[in-house]
Length: 309
Image (tube, rainbow, N blue to C red; front, top):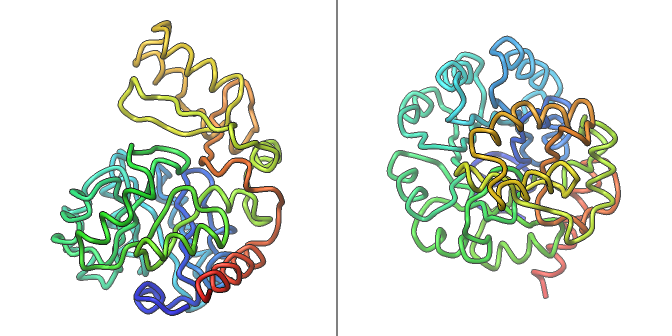
């Protein structure tokens, strides 16, 4: 399955693993890259020394195969991370939560492929003008922080608006979703939630069990009152947050305080009382834990069969 994305990145399968904060580290990223996709390390607000170590471990694991680092542009140390990927010779950078324009020239001069994640046509066009190599059009079905446009609506509009390759994200769980994304005009896909069930994903067993056992109605969006809506697994904690936002008993400032560090509590501790277990709307479609390699090969075999029809 050769596309402009496989040619741009030098990968076998046109699939990126999402840069999920506290989740996407060297073990998972290396597994995805070694399976023929593009593994991505989450920058988030991670300390520089920690991220440098993650990058170097990944290099040692994947050899000359490509991998990426995701930089959340609203992170307090975004500028340090932007320089770190240059210093460490990271091949690919994906970005989220902001406009990557201020770093684009330096990254391009360093030979880095830059792929911003965008929730709208307007930002996709700005990123193309700034020099992005491709964009990830991410629909509201995705886990974590979300926009409002659905993947089905967003992807074809972005494809029509830009000349650079478009990668679809949000609500993709198997070969059917990959095939549908290609029919919408995408030339690659980015998956996050599905990789939570990879054997190599280092999340707490409680988190992994929640994802695998989730039903189709088990995702919930919180944080709308703060302006930063986020899709999670439905738990007592997340339902309490959503209810408090709706009836006004939790103010936006209180919401921020209550959820401070809640993702780490989910990922590392499996804390059901205080943890935010990020998960996309594909809850109910992820039914087993398996190696990332098996996952990728199975999905693309199904996608190719459907597309060949």
